[in-house]
Length: 364
Image (cartoon, rainbow, N blue to C red; front, side):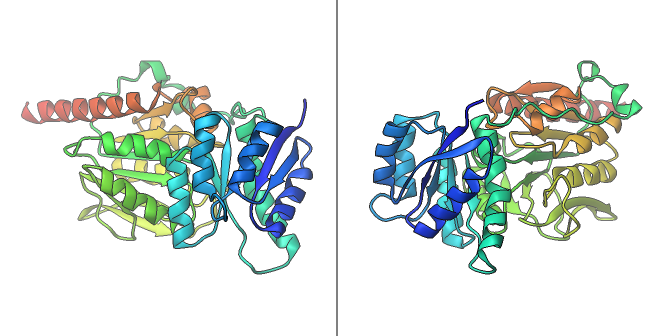
């Protein structure tokens, strides 16, 4: 298979050199060119026909956002990965880029440690994303380990999805900010069931994401905090680099936060959230697994199904990367595989059907 070609765009000679070294060391990738600003990058895209562009946020003579907007007009399907800093401004601009169609982002290493540490940090974050977005990897979900007898005994097609739902949990990664912007604001303000979301993002980014979704949504959206009560009409986003859990005490459902070890190389992890939701809600849980690399959410989805809950997955056509939802689908755990608009409709229908059934049973 021919190597996938990457155009590296950054005004820093040091960063261009570092990223080039990282990409060139991968057997499936090569750097076809570099550019110091967006204007030159646009010309080189036409000249070199790369398979992916890495694009710095802050550059003179056409910055990353301006270049991205132009690329989306001329090359709407070309994958773009933004390079950003872990600062408030960097996070804000990166979220703008993701909302404008960037596929993913990578945070620049802090100016600490040596070159070898910087290379290792960029390699760990950048290479899996480039390979997944360019198809250098076969992105079909890896075969999951054997499911439990309880999960296998409840095939997806046989579950009605009409039981009462006390909590909705969501796991999402690559492509998530755009998907969440299409999903959360379209849920009705009277949904009545709380939602907790794990989006794989670092600190600062998650708080800003919550603020942006809150400004657009009839539901209240906020970054999760330890001990916060979980009630209908609320959507909670897991804080970056923290696991978010749901617990039940005498006062009802509450959030919990910890810095336990990463699961599936992720913190926050959807599996951690999903397991806690099952324990707190006795299985009255609706799980959603949306676009993203890897298999985070697979084991948690199995627990939801074992306990009598339901799981939905984003379909392949609308996913940026069909790793997480694909793993759940191929394991037979997803009752439905839908685009974002279909997921909105299914969630509302299931919540209202469950509430109606619970009310009817209470009236008997």
